[in-house]
Amino acid sequence: MSAAFGERARAGIAARGPLCVGIDPHESLLGSWGLPADAAGVREFGLRAVDAAADRVAFVKPQVSFFERFGSAGYAALEDVLAAARAAGILVIADAKRGDIGTTMDAYAAAWLTPGAPLEADALTVNPYLGVGALDGASALAREHGKGLFVLATTSNREAEGLQRSTDESGRTVAAGVIAEVSSRNARDVQGDAWGSAGFVIGATVDWSDAAISAFTPPAPILAPGFGAQGAQPADLRARFGAMSGCVIASESRSVLVAGPDRLASAVQARVEQYQEALHG
Amino acid sequence: MSAAFGERARAGIAARGPLCVGIDPHESLLGSWGLPADAAGVREFGLRAVDAAADRVAFVKPQVSFFERFGSAGYAALEDVLAAARAAGILVIADAKRGDIGTTMDAYAAAWLTPGAPLEADALTVNPYLGVGALDGASALAREHGKGLFVLATTSNREAEGLQRSTDESGRTVAAGVIAEVSSRNARDVQGDAWGSAGFVIGATVDWSDAAISAFTPPAPILAPGFGAQGAQPADLRARFGAMSGCVIASESRSVLVAGPDRLASAVQARVEQYQEALHG
Image 1: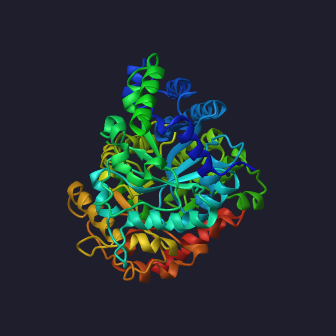
Image 2: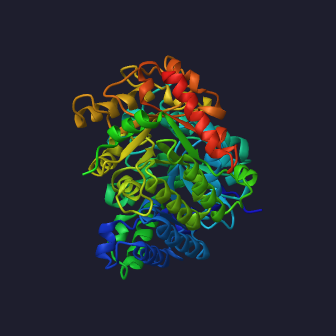
Image 3: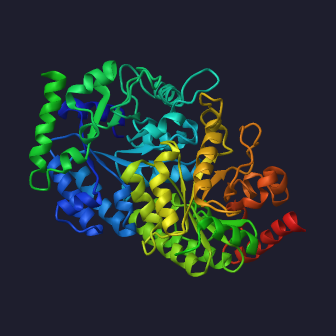
């Protein structure tokens, strides 16, 4: 029986801070790293990113689309990257944003969260458009194996506002509803001060007041894209996340990846220290 | 330059009717077909389904999660199934429900909709939680190659109602907003009475009045899961979809797949004739 993902994420943040290295082998980055835009290129990119992340950060987040781009060969590359990261003791968040219903959703959860599966990760990002309840099977499978979910709540891209800020009959926004429904499920699953294993994706540059969301219990990990190249800085973390700051997993991709393969490790280390300074310095 | 997907879908419905054979190699179906629950099993299942669909229906819809379950080997199987279906002249709708933003979403579109890509399909189901505008890059890539999107609008599972029926400031539901925003983009892209190439997923058992959605222009293909085992029957199609009936692609999976590999072709043929009778008989 593995420890629950919520507690593993909490321990990871405590041990190495909030930084999560996004593994986004975008075509332009492959080019600047001197790697081919093919499955071999994304494999090498991913493995080098894992090497740089190992022993420095608690989390990596491979962006699945950049591997899927190359079909089964891209997935074979991703399998190698996932295995290397897990072997290095890094918690792997597969950023796939999967979302479906019933046994179809269960199959996605099985693909990413079953021990021994070729694509085994520690957690999976998921999409709640088909209802938070449609994720219950995935959540049960995750719990069984000490795995986690990150449910999309609110993102910082402008075109998402209309949908995510629509309101239900009680006046609650879509984003707030997602957080409330997932949190009520987390509350059933945890005891004491433990963290829930179903976390959230909340953009780092989202204004919580504008999005009509607020601090929640039980605590659960918050995967926050938008640090680094997209505008939020380590020094902003406390101000942006307030009472929930301690739950944040700050995802950075391009801001560290542009350092290139030879300087990536030192770029990651410098960034780890900036978060340490901002949070505890 | 390929013809636009909207017109290809329209021609497909005109030639062979609305039935779309869902290729869902669920573990229980693999068992009843006498196939192993592994990548070889889903490959064989998919190829036999394509054989049964060829020359009978215009559309097949592989459910990607059931292939993803087996990692890169499952994707290699899916590549064979997609290629066989396209070689047979069937329009292939990859049911992957992908959704992301920016270059990440573009990479999903490139994976499924680029001619010559290992996972090339004719259309891809996508999720609008991050905003319809976040799909614009995918839509542009689709148009360039005569490919299509099916945007999740409203589904028939109860747990989706709270989110999909939330309303924006103007009182428009999330589902209606998705249809309006996609339709306004289709209107920019088509001329005369042509169909848009960005279609919708609308559950067959959704009550349009309850969901606060209504007929839209320009016409665009409506992928309607929920026929067959999930409750809607061919005779219901006209009543359920009213003025939009002619745009419906009626997806059935288990209802035909349970016939087993040897009787699948005759089950598909019988079902094709039931739709023909219901719509034109």
